[in-house]
Length: 473
Image (tube, rainbow, N blue to C red; front, side, top):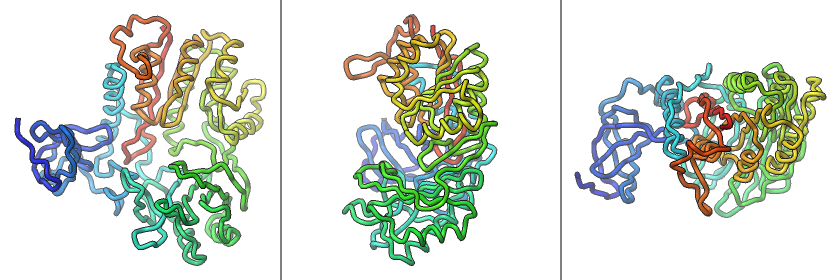
């Protein structure tokens, strides 16, 4: 094999052979596999080796010598610098194929489940689709306060004024906060020395109304009445919340919320359901794709012949309500108190008191007792966990419940594949580790994968939402 020079600035030319799980191009140089972001399969590229460890290397594209037909011009001026998008250089049809391959590869490599994954369901809007803005506020190398997005694998903030995957209102929010920061001398949070005031700006758009949350490291939000007035000048219906986060961690919100001005929550309609949302209520960021995803999940539940649904990690209750209307009875389990309260309001708004029951607690604590009251053969379970996936204790509770039909909605193919591997018996515990089970197909008490379908909830990024359906053997 060809010997590879491993100097930090070593340059070489190669052809991109495939895509990695994060959308980067893969090229071989001798025995070394290099990962190079922002390149496309088939392109001849001049690379610079940034890091080589063993047979794995990371490279930067210096020049695209032969562009691929799938390459397009990125819309964003800070693309490749900001860590928000990874695929703006790739034609949209190729993005959909890449995301299907990402899901298929995760199932095969992590869980040992080899199956064809259909083309990812497209988003009608490839840009300006996000109904949520979340930006950090910090300081640059000169000590100036900046608003933007983190660079890839970094907490260095890339300043932005607008972002093409957000609607124009996001740029207006950033503009208001820049004026507020400048006028009142508000300092961004410097996490290296743990000093400063403003840490994050989080905004949720709900049918033309805006829930703005200013997250501070300090107990007080300076000149909050003035900030409220500045936001009200730009937006007709706007709420300002103040959240305090003093933790030295990556979590955005702390536990303390204070309503500064406006309505605490806003109501809206989605998929025929009237719902309520507050500053910490989970909602899918792409409303159009959310409708397609939730409709598919509800149709699968009906096709199973289920008479009752259990929605774990149920958030504000939208999907629980849809299942209740379709099947006649549904239970939602959610640990976040605000989201549980929104689900209770939703039940009232939609006159579902006799069809929908909401529990506030951990899934692994609530599910066993709930299953003692309903028939597992007539039950449909839907789990929609955060990126870290389903807790191991929850998976054990599911396996012991005897529930016949399961659907999982996941925004992380890797943790989805791990969790599905446990549910199918393809992965088994050996001490503290999970290992592939070569004889899983003959195991009883586990589940078979019925179908898998990716949805492009996040165009221009490496992320993909997946609905995977399972049935007990």
